[in-house]
Image (tube, rainbow, N blue to C red; front, side, top):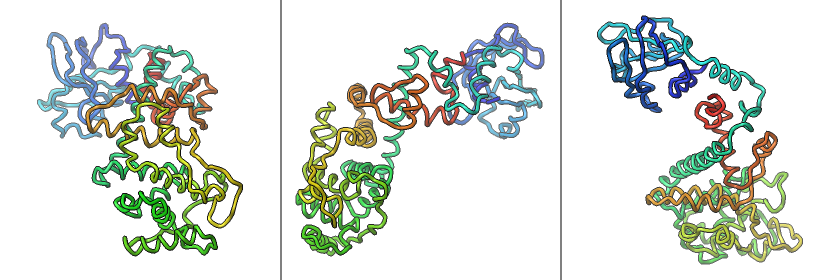
Length: 422
């Protein structure tokens, strides 16, 4: 049994409300269940009850056992002085109010609907399932599913933007600096993401602001800080970058990272850290005010055009500094741009608009619904159980559902779970 289930039963009155009796055999009529409190304090606030012939207005506290009142030390917490009813599954102890009178108790086990209990046990008892409702989710109506997806999407966007807010605080509310750091992290993908993030935080963004008008200096700064210019390479472009980096290093008191931190192992050449850094350099050389431009864009096509950049000529015939390869442009693919939009640009844009009090939800939905669905194990598994994502908006919603509801078994806070249990 789960205390959240008792909250759910009380909130939706999934029990017989006729002939209710407290443990003291008093008649109980629920006039108002109260407002569900998600913060500290009693579980339902401002409830209205009629106990025998007396109408009471106050709060309702819910526990699995009556003794939990003392386990949680509510007897010494004045926030619980206005509790007028203790709702429990098992009454194993008498709880006294401040006036030494017993607190009225309702044992839900005696009144809960059998179907609600059966649905609850059916949903939570099967441990082998990928998600608790994988055998039943197909039966939930489309209206419920679609509305829940939209809420999940914005929950995910909100959560990501809050995580980015910490980076914003660290950068003294400099959105340009935050965009650069988070874009760099995503350019590194899962394998090199954290190393890329450490790289761009190893120097002040003000230095990049000064050198980004000069492609050569910008490349020298990035590759130099990454440690790629510390090795001995008989290649003219590498030697030129090294000379320029030594100048920048002396001028700005820079300390290079160790190249060994970057992983090339079992990666496709197009994802080599050298190539991803070359693309990041090209992006910031072409677009001097990247954040401002991104905040103004309202269509997917315009975003694709913004990321339509090409690397320095050297990288068209190289994947690393010390080996020549077949000629290729190495432009950013649309699928890679989609990842950047989903994981960095949109959450940061959401945070920016929220700070200005002007969130345009329709723009986010419109663009995400035009992005192709992401491909990963979670989305594939949802497809297997009959929930097929048609676009990037839906894959983001399903990822939020799986990671923050299904895996944590928060079915009682999920629209699908609530629908099935009712």
